[in-house]
Length: 211
Image (cartoon, rainbow, N blue to C red; front, side, top):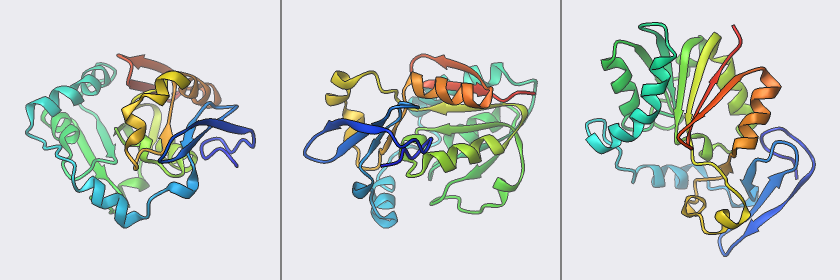
């Protein structure tokens, strides 16, 4: 079974429960769900439609500000960005627009126009979305291609912390969560692409592309 992120052939069983088996790549350390358990698109979207993430929800804005604040500290004034996987209520894009930035939107279900994917940006954000990627290697390459030289990629996702913690982890129980990254995975990706990596607060990942 190939790793869906780095295509390495050496993967091993990491965990199993009544729902799924999970495997780990021995090179990039990605943990991923058994591909046979991936949901069809219609079933996946039905779950996303149940999410209650409103742009005007103060609690949700506080949550997203954990990425927005450190990201903006790395931008040189008003910038142009893309919110990748923005969902039905693009709150982060609204927050960054209010702060003076221009933000385009892309989401395969809720903003499917691919025109924004044909240019490059000063920053790209992807919040609570990469864990949903069925083919994370393809999507990772796309995210990097969307960044201008010196641009910043801002991610939010919960990180794998080890087999024992994973066994008790509620995050894995969402059937749309299929790709689980760790600090080691991001260190591998950063080294491969020459990216500057910073992990803020445990689940905010900032990667800067070489200028």
